Amino acid sequence: MSNTTVKEIVTSVEELQGEIDQLKASIRDVYEKARDANLNVKAIKQIIRERKLSEAEAKEFRDVVEQYRVQMGMGPLFDVIQRGAPEAAE
Image 1 (cartoon, rainbow, N blue to C red):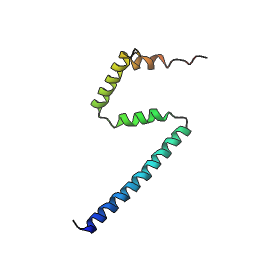
Image 2: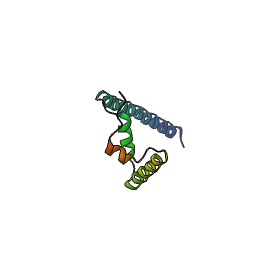
Image 3: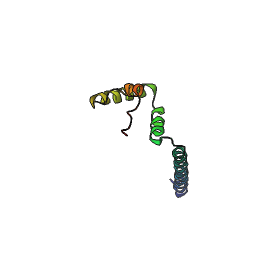
Image 4: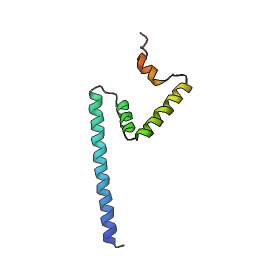
């Protein structure tokens, strides 16, 4: 492999890393806009993670979370959603 080829590869990788840094900054900006709109960024990030899963993977994940919630004495999430979140003590 010639030095020119190595230099081209290194330069290409460095340029791509720069693009990645720019994209990460753009993503941070979008999350900041979400915060400014009083949206729950953790919930948005969870939705993004879940949308990357196949339908089977998503179902398996939900099933495991439900099992763990029950084991922790928290009850199924579906019941919590139907009842509504607990009210904060005033």
